[in-house]
Image 1 (spheres, rainbow, N blue to C red):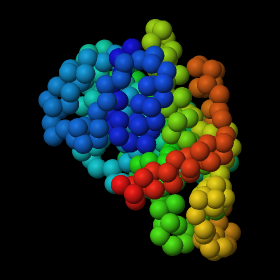
Image 2 (cartoon, rainbow, N blue to C red):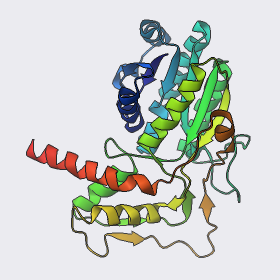
Image 3 (cartoon, rainbow, N blue to C red):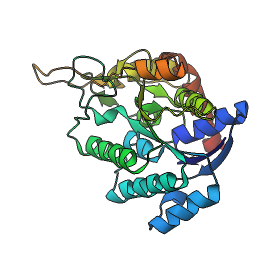
Image 4 (cartoon, rainbow, N blue to C red):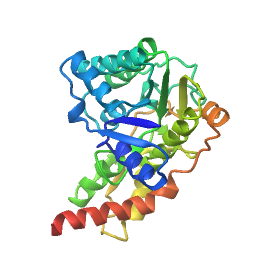
Length: 292
């Protein structure tokens, strides 16, 4: 199957390219974020036509949300252009979204039927993008993932280890719980979905995937620090706990992953198993950049 990846230079996009290069099951057409900054619907339509793909995998908006970049109205409009183009050409559209569409106030894992309720700007924009895709393209798959982490690009690992390497300390929240997802694990999930779509399966709709174990930002940073301590020395106070106001209710953006397991036989894996290798790659890359 011929797959157009929008945002091939994002952490998840790069992991998709690397994993697919090893598996060789699909033909990948990469398109970087800058190449997707179309100014008009006509430009977007031409990009889709040139790619001649069977499915579009769009990881741009998720990467912006996880990387702390501002999502603009024009980004949503571009999603609309892609969705319309896919619908007209009868191409499937796999749009990658985020657990950030939810507030975390629910006292159980969120399932696909739950209405996005995050009132923060990024959550609302992510939810609007989902609605645009679902409305404009009949053959759509919306995949909500927990926060993506990788050794490259802007994400949880680089945002935490960067300041620590500079000697700064992190003051992190221990109130919001989620299911972080290693970029390679996210790529595994997307490719498993593509494998089944390529057989003729038409499983259109929304799906959730998160790692099998949860963590707060503080707990994630603790695991990160333990793995990074063999490569660098950190002070005892490198990661501090943010003091929460008394009586603040704990939040959880945990996702119910039963539907993706039952539809695609995709099992959840723990995020902790990926940390050691990713931290090693991160320091190797930093060392290479320093010597380069």
